Length: 281
Ligand code: ATR
Image (cartoon, rainbow, N blue to C red; front, side, top):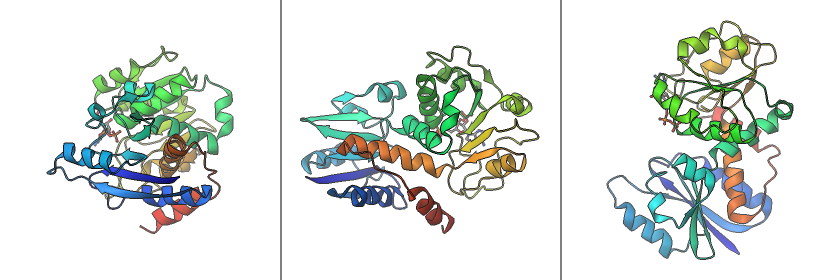
């Protein structure tokens, strides 16, 4: 089989996904291509989707701004994509287009690869900062994985409250302000930063500042440009272990590739290779 895989979105010229999926194809010795299909907001989305159908692609990733717009074109959604109301991976299987969302599981896999022991105790206290699409995916995945102590801090409390409604286990989720989160930061074992604050070119900003942090706490930022965000630098200075954002990108891609090909690619040193690319940017 010759896999024909694509990425749709706009703008995507600087996307790292082709590099990642070409590495996966190499590693699995599968034949195929992963190419960009950029859809300008001025173009007809309808016509572009028709083109993908005609080209008989086997699967594609969907990124901003089409993660919701793609949904009416699909025949089925997996449970996570349904709950997210957003799709980032589509597979063509037995005549049907099926939509998935691999962000949350990708995040969990990335965390587990670096901090496997964190998963041994599901009562660890987690603070999720932000309430956008990424936060939603991560909250859903953590809750379904059995973590029952997840608080959410966001500038706009109402969006955080929407996310808290996804809870099955985390019925004790508290929605807090950014200020309250900052003051109570020492209570958390894992702090996950999911907002765009700190992203290039605003590298000197951080969503909150650390004054103290719990011993052995993990600080995780999903921003990966730069890799060392101000948030992570401050956390590290205060004694936290850190978790870089590019690993989520790798593991959500690993899960997408698995959906398309049924092969779970071993990650080995890809993490470090991607780190080198990002540091050179
Ligand atoms: P994504 O889908 O990538 O997660 P998003 O949906 O645009 O991104 O969500 C952005 C998140 O970053 C939101 O939580 C947003 O807070 P609001 O819900 O209050 O808008 C947060 N965010 C972005 N810029 C921010 C800023 N300058 N200060 C605080 N929070 C910010």
